[in-house]
Picture (cartoon, rainbow, N blue to C red):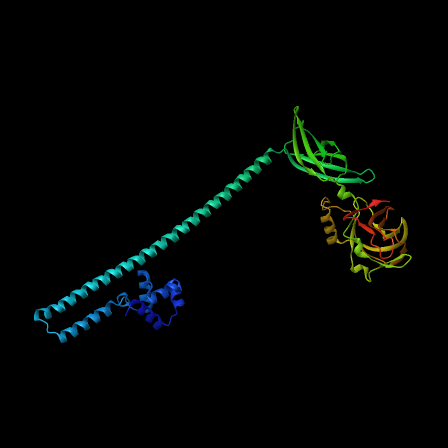
Amino acid sequence: MKLCEKLYELRRAAGLSQEELAERLNVSRQAVSKWENGAAQPELSKLVELSRLYGVSVDELLSLEEAEKGDAKAASSVEASTPVPAQETLAAPKKVRRQKLLLGAAAVCLALAVGLALYNNHRVKQLERQVGSLQSQIMSVQSSLSSQIAGISSSVREAMEESATLTAQFDYTVKRFDLDAYTCTVAFALRPKTVQEDLAVSLRLRSLASDDGTTAVVLVRDEYDVYRGEAVLSMNDAGFEATAAYDTGGERQLETIRDLPGFADEALPKLYEDLSFGYVLSRSYSASDIRCSVRGWADPEDHRTANLYLGAYDADVRSAWLDYRVDGKSAAQSTLKFAEADDEERSVVQWWISDIPDESTAGVYSIYGAEGVEFGLPYGAELQVVFHAELTDGTRLSAMLTREIMPSANNSADGESETTAMPIILTKD
């Protein structure tokens, strides 16, 4: 029986498909197919694995034993049919024994060679794994060292920068606003790292707006070695650059401390979110005019539509309303409901105004939906929706929310509309 046939029979006897056998031997199914149809022969290492899988020796797998049995049967047949001289008859068993010894020695050598190959392959894989593990450890150590070196370098750099600074602490507080003059009074406190008897400290506040110039602030030392002073600053949206000047023994050292806000965001009253969601302005068109109606919410307190931030105004809200103005004249007014905001809503508003300090005590109110009203206006008229709030100190704040030009005639599309961007800054009436 040929090797390919024996491989086919042994696989069938083992109950394995070509795919299963290929998976166990870590070869492709096509390789197994070629072995069984005689197109190719397995490698020596695969022959060893096949012999272990099928429980036969490599000799049996190579059909060596069957070859010996076939030779013996042929010899017996020849001896039975042909007279053999006595000397040849006596020499035949010796020849067979010699062949068997040679075949046995060859099988032992083959087994030793296969075993040695398997052992070497196992050792090679072990060494590869060890080398891979060592490489991983070396890379891990290198990464750890790089991180430690970077951390040390950063710490050293920060320590050097810290040791080079002259200022230990710098704070400021807004004491009051003057919205009419658009200014604010700010108090400053600066603590030097080192204090000498003849040390004089001053501040230079350079406006980051293009045309506001620089303000000088002389600081006076108190009994705690803290230098304090005040300045009246013109508010802006860009902020200020603060630089400290240290004068001692006729020498001056300058140090840029940090940028300050422009304080306008903190001071100006504003509306946040879109108050127009608090009312529904519907229209009906006739031949002569346009009828507008505002349908208020059934339960206004369930529909918060905007937040009102009072900024520098130290007062409470007394009333709030919407004024619907047609061609500059009030056509109807709709009262707004409001309530002072809770801590969570206040935090949301202060998050929108990034320059407001956490300790700000400015009033924050939640505005709710408007009550329903109706009014008419002619075609081509201008409609403005204006927000008003009256404070307990008598101050009235206002801002236009929307402006709309009505179409010139029924079914005409020549109208236009304009909405104020959020947040809306309120002005004093």
